Amino acid sequence: MLITDLIVGGLRAYAPQPITVDLAPMTLVFGANSAGKSSLLSVLPLLQQTAVQPEILSMSGDLVEGGTFRMAVHHHDESLPMTLGFSFDGGHVENVYRWDGSRRAAILAEGQPASSAAARVLSQVYFLGPMRARAERTTAVGLGGDLYVGPAGEDMAALLFERPELLEEVNRWCQRLGLGYRIRMLTPISHDIVISAGDFTVLALEDIRHDPPVLVSPRAVGYGVGQLLPVITQCCLSEGGTIIVEQPEVHLHPRLQSAVADLFIDTVVTGRAQILAETHSEHLVLRVLRRIREGALRPDLLKVLYVDLHDDGGAFVRELEVDDRGELVDGWPGDFFDERLAEVLPGLA
Image (tube, rainbow, N blue to C red; front, side):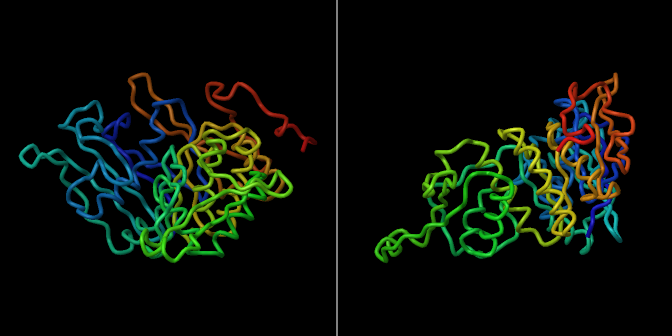
């Protein structure tokens, strides 16, 4: 089910009066550092990790490490409420949390725990944080399948080992994006090793820029490769739901930053998942706008959001309109990007 909006109030830079932020199948979030982008993207993961004990807000968990309520509430004022919510096709959640000094916790004051439908929506939110982990040298297998690589990509190797068809699809995207590597999953050939160490696999990379390809460790290649692989895997793995990615372009060459946009577009257009991405990459957004001009992405499938601060320090979110020519109708506010690439010029590939 498509998540149609987020509701946030009283979270860090966002004032207590909640605002509603509309989403699309693909939503790209831009803005200055510390303006409120990550806070906006944390709304769903916060509700997701709170769902275990819905009456008490869980600011710190496996998905989001938000510190204490006092650290996260607007102006660090524990007397202020924090509102977190979202809408989806057929449902709406809007919960208000207030600090309870006697219980030393933020307690659900208004709203109600997620309905079964809302809980299903939250269970299909796949959050990837801004720093994904490189694959471990060995990964235990046989732990059961899932549809989530984990917030740092920590479960990626086990999933690729257990799902050969997923590995094949990820490698197709590695080739399509021009990554220069293929993934290979290696297993011990000695029964004695398995008996003593348990079932495990090793994620290795083949450098296909050489003939024949050269086998290397993921820790021996550029850091950006390891950052991108969990994103590719999650986009190939999802069967519905919402993928949230912070800084998908981190440590990537501009060409690869642009190529990530094609991965996101394919994920959305084929219906594998909704994408909500926070990014600083002009290259990524320019590729998306170019694909609109070329007809590969309809404008109504995209929202571009700009997050900034009012003079009083409160965060606001502004939607930047995109027309059917793949142009931002009013341009970037405040000259957010001071250059334009040749990709936006008619007639250039």
